[in-house]
Figure 1 (cartoon, rainbow, N blue to C red):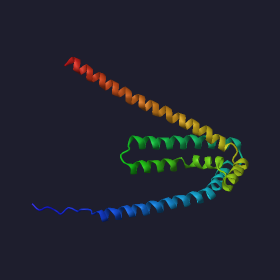
Figure 2 (cartoon, rainbow, N blue to C red):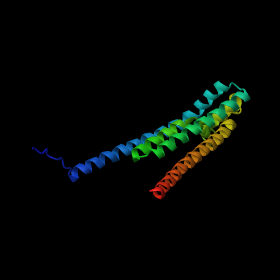
Figure 3 (cartoon, rainbow, N blue to C red):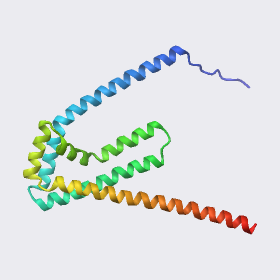
Figure 4 (tube, one colour):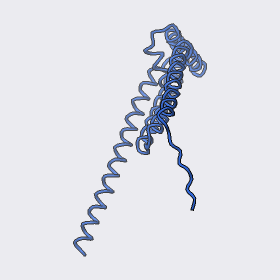
Length: 180
């Protein structure tokens, strides 16, 4: 029976790996900061134009689209977070879950960026939504609140169901002990 030689890591290898991770982390952080500034300068105006094109100045359409987007994307983002929490196994998976949840919530986050942003693109987005997308911002807020409440009710009922199953299993175990 032949043994295969085992690879050993030397402290120099660990130092190289650490250096590579630090460089990649710094590069990733720099790219994220750059993307943030580019996004803050472009995305609010772009998002407002897309919404303005869809709403076309109609208050009822703006309110309905805002309500729908707010509710749907809040529920989906919270569902992704909930599933990620239930199925968590590593930091990497947790980070991926968080990134996916932010991407799913991006329509609501873009609207929020227009509402609370103080840059020129956010102000331009506000003006566009005032004229071409009336009702969208308020509808999005109401929809996000409804979506959060629906998600909370879902999570509470899932927790209650899980607790009830555990209680039933415990009662069955006790009944089996008394019978046996």
